[in-house]
Length: 425
Image (cartoon, rainbow, N blue to C red):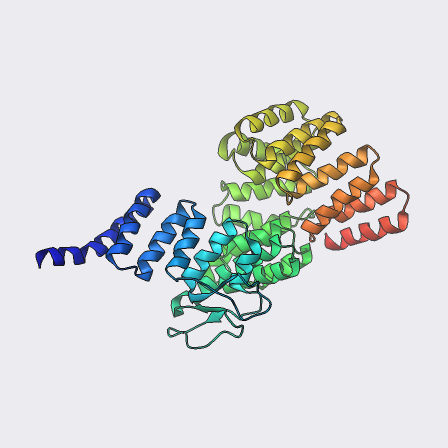
């Protein structure tokens, strides 16, 4: 009897130890404990989820997915909807289980499978209420929420659906889902970053949407930061975003915040104040945040604009030595050769960058410039078209297409593209 009573207490102790292990990033230990816990609890769903979560945190996404399916937290079956692929997963179970499965598919770049799991239609996947009594409208897609988790998971699912759609080049659907995520949770900063960094909307649409978000009381600073971000992504006028940045720096004491500093550098770059911008990025690159990809790209562009060939050479060498597997390193090498006027070598490295990451728009723009400089108009326009496809809300691709048509003497088409660029900006 004493032994039986002791065994009954083991699952509770193991759950505490697993959470403690995860808190200090001992994921292998958490996996070891969770594997034993499932045996003690006869495969209880909550314990299987602990094991799956530990696998996810240790980046073992296939094993995480297997646990979710094996213990039927997410069912694998043939859906009745003809729009889904015959082998796709069907979401039946608690939302946290389905969401973890979708995150695994996202990390494995299985975008269509992830979207099949979460569905595509408007609000067809949400069952509110503790008993989950209301069925979703699309066969096979049922996600159950506790009352307290509706808003949180609704935003998470919308964001993940938007990311899938963006990666599958469904730009309109991606915009809708990212906006829906922000409406459900205005603090969902990842959705805002994708909308703005991905240039999925033009400047006017960005500002109108951000203005529609509701921030209460002490949250007002978040809205100011969002507006600054939107202003800095376009070629702003002298006063655009200036007041918001001043309030954030002085009233909210964010003057030393690196995110705000980067926005300030972007603002100066857009206003062609390159020397002012580079004084900010130099300090960030060398002292405050040397691994910020966003700052590195801006800093490289500034070095090109200022013809700082020696600095470009030094930075390119450093990046290739320390981060040879990142697209930014080879983009920097290409920029160095571009600054030298060696367009053949520049094109080689910009091509390498686009092969490493087909969605890295700065490399496509630079690739287009390289071809333009050697009078290869067709290849230049092909590169600019890729930039337009990836960033439909950016005016740059349209502008450079117009300039290329000027070079080739096609003035009517040039005017059309430049007018589009002006409208977007």
